[in-house]
Length: 554
Ligand SMILES: Cc1cc2nc3c(=O)[nH]c(=O)nc-3n(C[C@H](O)[C@H](O)[C@H](O)COP(=O)(O)OP(=O)(O)OC[C@H]3O[C@@H](n4cnc5c(N)ncnc54)[C@H](O)[C@@H]3O)c2cc1C
Image (tube, rainbow, N blue to C red; front, side, top):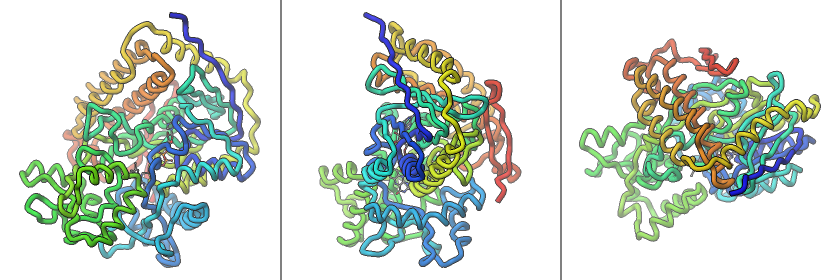
């Protein structure tokens, strides 16, 4: 067989946005409308990519005409909720204060943010407490945001997966990617770079069908590439060791629990939580927002399974629930119910925690201007956390600040990056021309096994140290042995390398955090230590990890 030759393409821009999800497209549009020359590099196709690919329906926001002029009570409520506690108040304040503007913009662009002419609040709230998530019809959001970004002048390059950042004396000056369809590397030279690569899925096994890697609750294209490349470039990564898992229908992974209007009940028909006893489109059943282990605890104590029971929901209530689930990208699941003739009022749907499918809560440490700790590098969205609203708002903010910064920077010269490019090309040629060996799937599955077995639901010093050795061995073997028989497999190999780096950081952070916090469960340190209510920051210096504790500064 003849040797595979790898072409090179050079792309220059003021602002490079890596990842054309919600944050990336918002960043691209804002930077372009401020006059920057913007390129978006997307591994898939921005019209249908990322966790917002098929729609979402809850948008976190503060609307003064409804909530009153004081934002502080909403910040308090936020800090008590699923996402609270990780960021200081000024970050949350910036987010909430900009949310109304973005809601209005989306509505103007054609993403319906109102229902019957008014804001409809629902889900992610406990009865009696302030509600701060509106329902919106996000089914076509990716197509609309793509058109908006293109209209404002951004160039979108689909099917290019970025692997690494290029730096010069600590400044980020571009990135390297691979074409997922052709044997080509793409060298991006940019004055500023924005990371918007989303969450970090597929590092742990899919919960419902562990042997099938792509039945995941969030987009399986989001594997933590941004976190890995930011770390290798020297940026700060924060709280990567604290994992999260969520729940949903059994065997059919899908986010969107807060849109279900039923009550979670045991086989005896009794509600499993204290918050609701009748179906309600307004609240659904918020028990899992407060008590994530409920499914497992019911199972262990002989009281499971737990069902989402919509019995008692009116026809109008059912229509409303269907409408929002359709907008939330749950069409496949609704079609399945219809095919099987299942009405969740008559046949409650079993719900489970997706407890194997852990994903890191933390990520690239960006501040309320979207800036990371490296000059020239910004980040937004699920690179750290925030759902749709956080992605939209911090994407917008990051785009604005990257555009402003790029006005004062010159275009980096090619000489500065030539060694890095040569090294990258050699790595790619090696993967494409190696004769025989394991493929990316074998490495990805082994990574998932190591992660779940050694730093999954149970963690201890001895497990973490053994797991770290295993992952380092796998990393070394993967880099020296993986084969890619086409450009698609090549991009999957690059994902695996990134996931291995993120996995290693999880081990290091989990070992350092000698306490139990949320789903970071240390059997050797079984309680939450108030003195560790801090951020754990990891960065690379001289190719070695440096860990540092920092106060959250409420
Ligand atoms: C079914 C479902 C329902 C949900 N419902 C809600 C909801 O109602 N409300 C809410 O707040 N959240 C919801 N979420 C979560 C929400 O979709 C995410 O939080 C949000 O999309 C994050 O935006 P992001 O821009 O950070 O990442 P994404 O929108 O996931 O975009 C990341 C993009 O980066 C691309 N990418 C990744 N790596 C690379 C790389 N190396 N090179 C190039 N491109 C790359 C991906 O292909 C993707 O396009 C839901 C998720 C799902 C799956």
